[in-house]
Length: 237
Image (cartoon, rainbow, N blue to C red; front, side, top):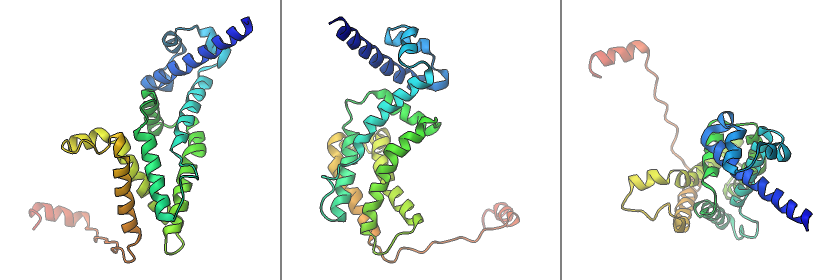
């Protein structure tokens, strides 16, 4: 009984350390966070960090593993991606949006720490890309290949996949901006709007993908520096 109790206490201490470390790393960044800050917030001792993690880097990796585990949910299971390519695309977009917009149980520090990683990637970012982001990206690209009338080049794959990811992430990451720009449309960006946003993104994207004669790239002739200066002096005449 004693051993079982001690094991439970040890697991709980480790959990508190990871939760506290996530908050501190999100607030101050890896370099500025200290073990003392973390242990004070976790209400435990510095010795407990040495016992469970040995050093700050190992504790940070444990925090990132928790973030990685949480993010895996954005990948739609194969059982959801049924039907033709268009139906698969809608299921993909809807699942992605639903998982993120409805993440009420996710600690706030996860979103902040993820933003920090994007701004200043740590060595742990590579694992997150390889285990979570790359599989999601590759699955979306595979759906888009099925929709393409001809084989896609690597450049086309990049641009088309990034376009759809960008549309989804705008509604996920810019909810405060959308709310200020369109205060009269408060429901867009709310958790229950996943279907609405998914329908729009898919219709919009399918219309673009079906365009067989896209507008040609327009390259404006570059004016020389002297020409630009002359135009400025004459008021653009």
